Image 1 (tube, rainbow, N blue to C red):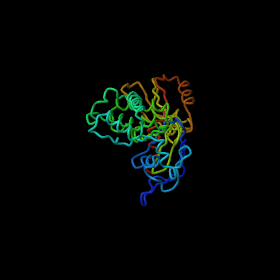
Image 2: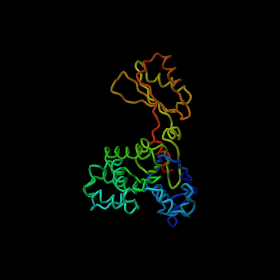
Image 3: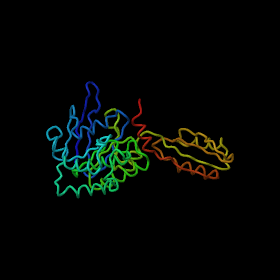
Image 4: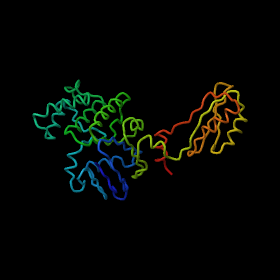
Length: 312
């Protein structure tokens, strides 16, 4: 549905986005992740036609952002990081005003406002001034604004930034409901949000795409070593370390302090390409040590993100 081809954006001599290529499927919830200054907002602004690319192109359906910018804008709903609301207006009056700007027919307007009120959880606040609302409620009004023309594609820039945990969950549920019918592209710094909300994650660093895939597939990538934690009873530390040192693939063995003097807890760092759990368990079984704990740490999205975006 959306094809981004060699997308590049310069601000004078600074390259903010560097030859990005991306294909976004219809009905997908895509999360755009990256550190501050990575180029996420610049990409979103080019997608919406707010910025023209220095080079490259964006195709949405049969339209090009260079030649058919107005046609593309008709397909989009966009919520920037700071929702552009008129705080002196009532919620109903503001959304009615947006409906008029969007050219919603009078006979369709009331039903559209009612549907958005239900979708975004605004039914109880339609006659309250926007200035009195919490940030989470203001963000809901902003989403209703972006959805007014029933766009095929919804673009959200940091939709949960500055919200408390309860508000984040509420916005997440709204995004999921909308995602059942729309294509959604959102940027976020909150990795747990991307993991909980998005079908697919694209990580950008210094204007380039450094990872693209589902959160589960990304956890299988990277160079991070596997870590196995073990706790044993009736085991001599020196004997255990000597036994495990002979297993090919174990790079480091460190002792973890515990409150139980009879418990030996170890952290085994293993090569990322090897699964050594079977070999380790066989050694424990042969020695008749009592195994109290045995688990391999999973790679988290946070660790993958740090691997891909850290400075050289």
